[in-house]
Image 1: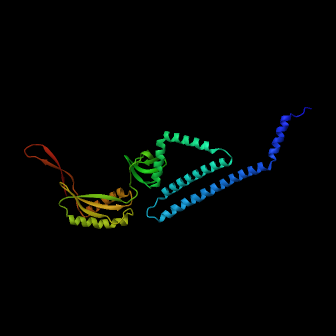
Image 2: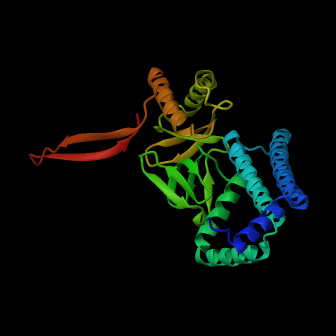
Image 3: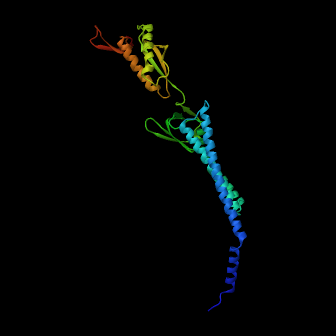
Length: 303
C-alpha cells in the first residue's frame, strides 16, 4: 500500500484544526446573530412605518381637505412601498458589512450606474415625479372626469409613469405624466345646468315666469341629482322675434347635461299644457295676382 502524501495529510490536519476552533464558530454565530437581528429589526421598522402611514391618513379624515378612498389607498400603498424598499436596501448593505464585504465599492458603482441611468432616462424620471405629485397633490383620481389639453374623458388609471383617460366615444388616451401641465377636473365641485327658453313677444312674460318657477319647485323631489331649487334668472336676450329666458339648476358633479335635458322636457310640456306657444320657423306661401307663380318666404315668427 502507498503512504498518503504528506501535503494532503498536512492540509487535512489544518482543516480539522480550523473546524474544531471554538473562536471560528463563535464568530460565525455572532455574524448569524447579527443577520437575524438585522432582519427582525427591518421587519419591525417596516410594519411600524406602514402602520404609522395608515394612521396619518386616518387622522386626515377629520381635516376639511380629504382624499378620495381610491386616491388615499393609492398614496398609502406608494409610501409604504417606498419605505419598504428603503429599509430593505439599508438592511442588505448592513448584512454585507456584517459579512466583512466591502460595500463602498458596491455603493460607488451603484452611484455611477444610477447617474448614467438618470442621464439616459430623464423623461422617465420626469414622468415618475409627475405621477407622484399628481397623486400626492390630489389633482385627480380614478373615476374623475377631466380635460387635459385637448383630451377629455374619465380617468381610467393613474400610474407613476402614465395616465389613461377614456373618452365617452370609446377612445382611450394614454398620457405621460411629465407632459401633464394643465388639468380641468369636472368632478370636484357641483355643476350647473343652463337652459334657455324661447318665447314670442306676445307671450305674457310674468305669467310664464310664474309657471316655470312653480314647476321648478317640484323638480328637486323628482331628481336627486338636483341640489337646491332651480331658478329663473330672467331675460337673457331680446332677439329679432323671440325673448330668451334663462333657467339654471345646481346639480351634482357631471349631472348638468342630464338635468338640462329633463328641464327642457318638463318646461316644454308645461308650456304646452298652459297653451303657451314658443316661436318656431314658419313658411308663408303667397300667390301673386299679377304673376302666375308662387313666392315662398321663410320668416321666424312668435306664437
